[in-house]
Amino acid sequence: MENRRFILIALLAVVGFFMYQAWQADYGNANGNGNGNGVAQNDTPPLPPASPDDVPVAQPADAGESTGDTPNDIDLPEAVPAAAPAQESAAEADPSARAVIETDLVRAEVALQGGQLRRLELKGYGESAEQPDVDLSLLDDRMGRLFVLQSGLVGTESALVTHLTEFRTEIPSVRLAEGEDAVELVLTATVDGAEVRKIYRFERDSYRAEIRHEVTNTGSAALALSPYARFQRTAFLTGGEPKFAMTFTGTAFYEQREDGDGYRFEKIKLDNIADDAFETQQTGGWIGFLQHYFVTAILNDEDAVATFAARPATDQGYFAQYVGASQSVAPGEQQVFVTPFFAGPKLQDRLPDVAPGMALTIDYGILTPISGPLFWVLNKFHSLTGNWGFAIILLTLLVKGAMYKLSEAQYRSMAKMKKFAPRIADIRERYSDNREALQKAMMDLYKKEGFNPLAGCWPLLLQFPVFIALYWVLLESVELRQAPFIFWIQDLALPDPWFVLPVLFGISMWAQQKLSGQQMMDPTQQKIMMVMPIMLAAFFTFFQSGLVLYWLTSNLIGITQQWFIVRKLEREDAAKAAIRR
Image (cartoon, rainbow, N blue to C red):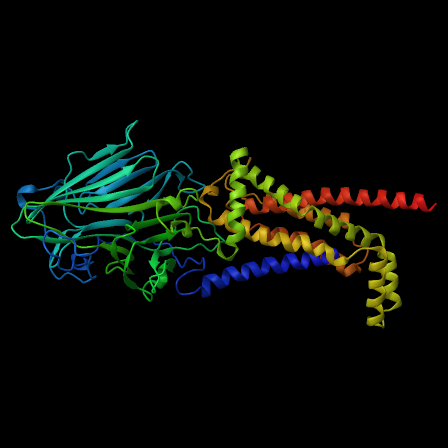
């Protein structure tokens, strides 16, 4: 009976979990708080960058002061200003010309045409389990992908510099030297009435960077300018994505509440942006794109007013856009516009320091109150062992230790059920035609002998929230991405490639059944129970190997506990029998 109850609960939990996953993917709410991705692989080559008509226009500003206003997202009917003919840039000669920035954590490529950040490789993060030595490109414009960062300055009637303006640079490749805290790539452009320096600044040991526009007004009239930056991306999946898991890809933003009382984190799946496009003006916050393990965001100062927008692009993909407050540049003066951004992994110990609300991009779902502390404990064990697999084993020992008293009650109950199986069978046969009398006789037996058949359910029921919470930890925590264990297990966040752990799990479950005994079952039930370990092992081939490792370890500990408790119970019974003699 205990085994049947165990199996039924396990099967219901697994089936229910898969149903919840499918429901989230198909019917998640509009703002994407589920973890469905709605993303398809895009193998078509990217089209040219967004057209000049897709550039925002600034609102007027008085000379020499900041208005605090932000531009509306209005299409610009004019052509984007080109560089002066006398200042022909490298980009004119070679539209594909790029400058390179390299730090200890990233390698970035900036196109001279437009000064767009077209590629950003994250060092130490393999493209996939099959290509662990190839650095993952978070921003990319190759192999049919498009995910780039565009930026510029817009005015009241036309743009000053945009993501199509042609820049030049004296040093096309810069690298962070030992002892330096930051590195800068300087791009320059001469446009009608202004000299512009566009500077990318990356810091050591940081995925937070900034774009700085330094504008010198060489004309006779004041310039009212607003900085803008936006990520444009198409729908594609990065390498190494789990095959049977629902992950989120879409826009994410930290917006001010309508009543002005605090902020909230919102997200929209990529395929819902067309229907849920928005534009909002607020103080502080950030906007960007969220995907499995990684986040990109344009950051706004906490006290600055900005306009955020998410919408489909006119050519391809989607925009997550920021437009800052308008600033006036008087003739002969210089103004600096700084736009911070973040592009990197969702490291839990770093995100809170990036910007308010950034830690919310790590989504463990409704089990966050369990998953958060669970990861904290796992991280502590990892700091001790240096291996996430051994950390999972230590976590399992901790969980089983915390539930030892409940497990003891469970195995005592199972042992007594096994011991009194003949008497229980006799009662059932005697009162087979009288259900009420049968229940009363069974309860009298339970009370007299001091055991409860329902006690076996509690340890299992209490472990399932931990099981599901660990699933989300393994799925969402970039710290465990491509984390090896031993031998053939080279990624605890992916299923076991050789199915060894699921098979061992099935064997351990079969051993538990044999240890528990099946005397109370009829032959048909016993045959069904013999098939159950095979069925659950098959289910577990779809789960992350780290999760199967947790449950296998739990079963092995349970077998040890059961053997110890049964032996202890036998010694107690022998002692009682000796006293009676």
